[in-house]
Length: 124
Image (cartoon, rainbow, N blue to C red; front, side, top):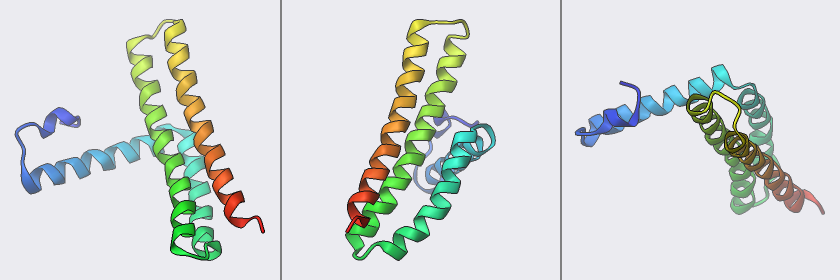
């Protein structure tokens, strides 16, 4: 069982182990099926070490890392939204288009947020 319903009735360590497995499956699905996620992982692989190099304080490093991780989070949510919309509405629909466009806009805003954080912290 690979959905959250599989957690019902499970408690303690078993629930945690199952949840971690589902999270791993989600990350693998994003990696395998979403080119944008793979590109953003590449961005993270470059940006995260730079955050630790350029961040002067723990707060600066946290802001820089957090802004990059937020991009990955929003991309995964956007991809999940698109998958659900495609399943629920395989035919053309204005509401489906709106939902997918809004998910894409959320990714764009997370990218702009990261750029703003990095510029604010690195601009002398």
